[in-house]
Length: 221
Image (cartoon, rainbow, N blue to C red):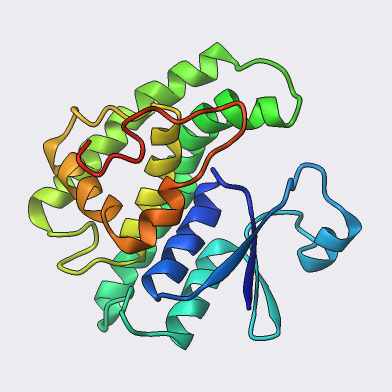
């Protein structure tokens, strides 16, 4: 049995879940409040972060490394291109969303609106929320520009880059922080990726105290 220690709205955990789902690998989800780490959890990952994946007798940490590990073990259907240039572009975009997008958008919207309350750290910082709401516009425009030239974010085939982006946007969509009317390309792209079987468990997520909006699980949003 594959076991994933995760937080439902963590985009890094969602990226791993999407990768596993695309490969049709069954996984047991174990929710882990990493901000209250147990000794057992810290033995799994001394960095005290999720996701942590137990698979094939190994305990794995760091979402990008986990996804590429899964890709190497289960290359079909492929989520990485065959060419060095293609793999570079996928890795560049995964880093874009997991580093730049996360720092400028996710950490300022999701953390302030949800995670902070779950951690018992008080109310959202309105300044940071405003900064995140402004920054997401730039990122949606950039995604729209990419999709003007490509079928998927990194090229003609779906890849880990799409799952990295969808992981962040789906978490933000859960709290209604994505303006899907800003860019038609991005809306169409998300509708396609949202309808994939790998997305089903993501759309079934429910965080107590934070109900999703009606459109969250609607494939025709």
